[in-house]
Image 1: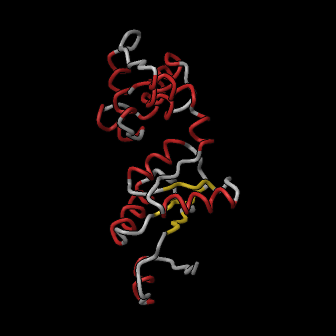
Image 2: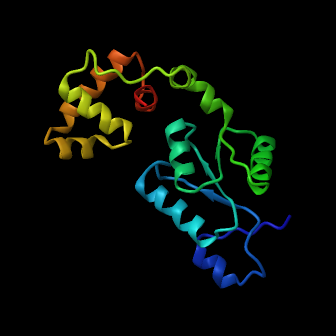
Length: 182
C-alpha cells in the first residue's frame, strides 16, 4: 500500500496523483470532533473524494462525537486510544464498504442504548415546560449558547435546566440525555 501525507485537498490535487486514494485518514487535532470546524472538514473531504472512504482519527472516544463524524460522511472513526491492529482493520472495513465505530464507545453508553432498544420513550412527566424545551433542543444536538439564544435565557440558566434533566433521567452526560430522549 502506498501512503501519501498531505495537509489539504488542494495539496493532494497539486501533487497530481494518478488516481483518487483508496482511503483517506483525516486526523483531527485541536478541534472538537463534533464542532463546526471539524464537521466542515469532514464534509469538504468527503465531497472532494466521493469514491474514497474517509476515516476520522481523533482523541475523543465520545459516542456523540463519533456519530457526528459519521453524520458528516465519515465511513469510520478511530480514537487515538485504539491499538494499531484495530486501526488497520477499521481502515480495511471502510475500504470494503463498511462503517467502523469502536465497540468501546458503544459499550460505554450501554445503558442509554438499551433504553432506546427497549423502546423507553421520552415522557414529559416530571419535566417543567422549560425543561421540555431544553430537552428537545439537547436531543437535536444544540449547544448551550444556541439553546440560550433561541429560548431567550442566560447560558447559566440553560445549564441548570440541563443538570435537572440529567438528574431526572439518571444520566451523566449530554449524549446519554439525547439517547434517552429519542
